[in-house]
Length: 131
Image (cartoon, rainbow, N blue to C red; front, top):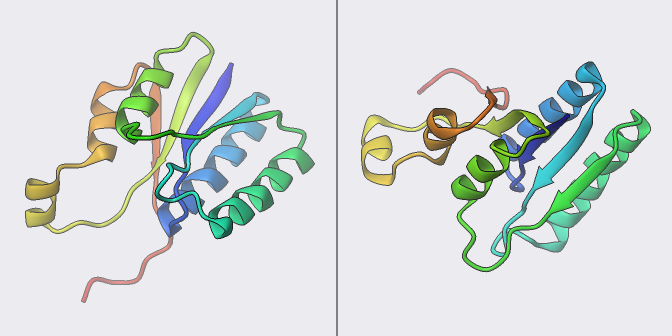
């Protein structure tokens, strides 16, 4: 069995990957990291990913990284992976959005939560009070 996580170099992505490592340790399973996409695949993102991979390896968690290519839709990729036989949990990062933002832009996280073929653990970074 494995835990899958979508990673982008944002606070939400970092929170998701950290939670996914914790879940993999708790479940004694491997970790599948999806991303970052080509637009987010910077040297800084690779450095962050390498640091988090070191944390997973130090915990004894086998990891696989699958980079998104071209125009891969992150939501579609995560939902597709959630239906693979060995995936028992998907971890995603979520962020605050205004009501208008949700209406106009839609939500990848919402789509993953509603369409995934396994349990989804939605996490958020630490945030302060709304202004």
